[in-house]
Each structure stands twice: as structure tokens, then as C-alpha cells.
Image (cartoon, rainbow, N blue to C red):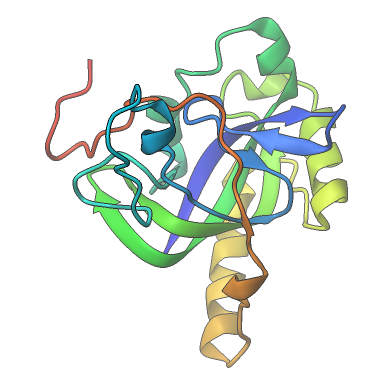
Length: 188
């Protein structure tokens, strides 16, 4: 399953950060970790494999590039916008489908492009730096990312294999309840 995600490049650490869930991507592949128990105010541990239907954990992606705009509300500062880029993801492991996308146990960035907003006014520098650091393609237009997904899917059907065991666990910043499945909660 393929999807689109807005990420913010951190040139000092050489990693990408999700502006909403604060997942840190140190490589092009990562695994979700539910960190709810870390912020449970001393209560019983509720940690579980991500994603879980009863929790909002997992790696999120919009199912279509046009839907990505609903997911980029976390990119608020001009500095973040200068470092934002669009990533094409392929999901791995358990996947929970949402109204406008999915959340998964693992994901791999296949290619990157410029940020999903005001595309003509943003520098592609962050996307180019992420592509170079992760060893993945840079596409000048985010609309070209769909072609990369088709090529990847064709290669998978032809017998090429991914190696999810190479994925690194995603370190997390402070946990947030944002991103409940769209089918069960109305977003405000």
C-alpha cells in the first residue's frame, strides 16, 4: 500500500521528522512504536505493537497526494515550511486503512519531492538533502511520485523483495492523540 507523508528535514541530525506524530526517520525505513505508556502519567503500561485499532499509534500516510493537505496541519512555522518535503511511502507489516489514508507498523520512503503546499515558492533543498542522505530518488514535482509507486509495485510483482527486518525502530518525541481513524472520529 502506498501513501504520501509530509516530513520536515533536520540538517543537523540528518533525519526527517513527522510534524504531527513527531516520528524521527533516521533511515528511509522505520517501524512504528506505540509510546503511549511513556506518557501515561505513572499508570499501568499500555504499550502494544503498533498500529492497534484501540489506539492512534502507527505511521500515517495520506492515500492520495491531494489528501496530504489534511495531514500537514502540523507544519506551522516558517522554518518548518522551509525544511518540509513530500515523501512517497510504502507500508509494511500490519496496516489499518483510514478514510483518507492508512497507518502502518512499518514504512519505507521510496522517493521525495518538494513540500505539499505553495510548491512554486519553496526551495527543493530539504527534499534533495533527504534524498541524498537516504539514498532515494528526488522528483522535482510531487505529482511524479505516483509513477515511482507504479514502478515499485511492478518490481514487487516481478519478484523483487523488500527486507522489513532492516527497518529501524522510530524514536518518538512527545506522544499526541492526533490522528484518530477518520472513520471513528470527526476531525476538527
